[in-house]
Length: 75
Image (cartoon, rainbow, N blue to C red):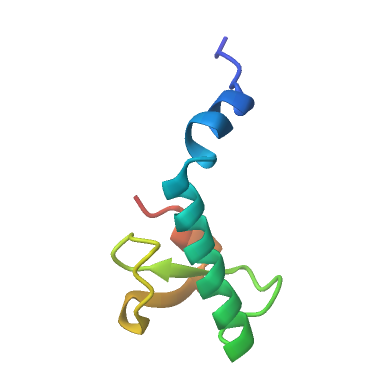
C-alpha cells in the first residue's frame, strides 16, 4: 500500500519557497496577458506553454498556446 502524501509538508518545503512563488506569479502574469489579448478564454482547456521550460522567460518567441493535455504531459 502506498504511503499517504503529506501535503502540508510539501507546501512548506516547496510551494511556499521564494523561487516557486516567483515562478507561479510569472505563469499567472502570462495567462492574464493572453486572456486580455484574446489568445485564450476562460474554460477553453488551453495552457500557455513556455517552450524552453523556464516560467520566467516570457518572451513572445518562447510562448505558445497548447492544449492542457499536451502541456502537462511534457517532461
